[in-house]
Image 1: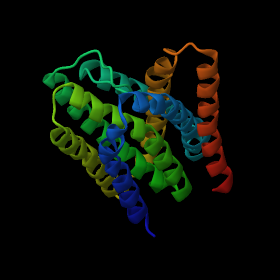
Image 2 (image 1 turned 180 degrees about the horizontal axis):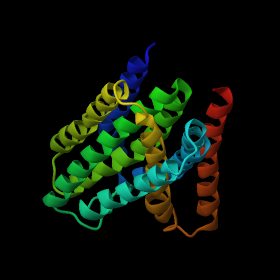
Image 3 (image 1 turned 90 degrees about the horizontal axis):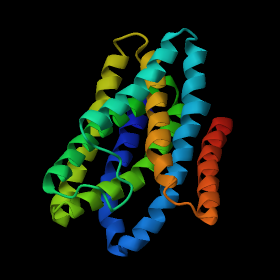
Image 4 (image 1 turned 90 degrees about the vertical axis):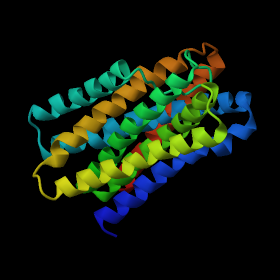
Amino acid sequence: MTVWSYTIISVLIVSSLSLFGLIAFPFGEEKIKKFLIWAVAFAAGTLLGDAFLHLIPESYKSSGDISVAFSLMGGILAFFVLEKFIHWHHCHDIDCDEHNPTFSYVIMFGDAMHNFIDGMIIAASFLVSIPIGIATTMAVVCHEIPHEIGDFASMLYGGFSKQKALLYNFLAGIVAIFGAILVLVIGNNIENTTHYLIPFAAGGFIYVASADIIPELHKSTKVSHSFGQLLCILGGVAIMYALLVLG
């Protein structure tokens, strides 16, 4: 299989997760909440594991100059700007602070931008190597499952019908394909494209895990919950390490 084939299949899998909310929502609000708290903890582990075990080492292996550090910080700041100025956040819970139709449209727009970047990140990872591409795709998938459920639930909470929320969530999801194609096209024509995108992706993953997911986990102070969350985070890191060893 070519890099194009791996990338397009991976992005289609990630995009299809936008339909996951419809499958999960009939289980009820309380069951979704119980699932999300463990899923996001595992997602934090995979994001951090992919950033520190795969993306950052690969960046310094290919080029050890200061531009790697600036690209890494650029990824962190870019995701900060995305959340700060578009007024969107990764809603991993059903109880969002705002609940109006405008908020639902903001979620959709922010989600589309985020998915576009996800597509770029996945494509850039596959341009480096197939194992790194697979690891990055898994990290994105683990994060996207609770993310998509949260977005779907938030749109319903904001007044959208199930059909409308599903359609808009799906349209925002397929935007990732365009981001992937853009990187695959320019990657073959512009030298060192991945030199900047890979550490940028690592910075984005670190931001999402540390500034978005981990504070959400701190809302639960029960010792049993905290221990379980730690195990889930370590489980996510372990998966990324296993991929590193097997790759």
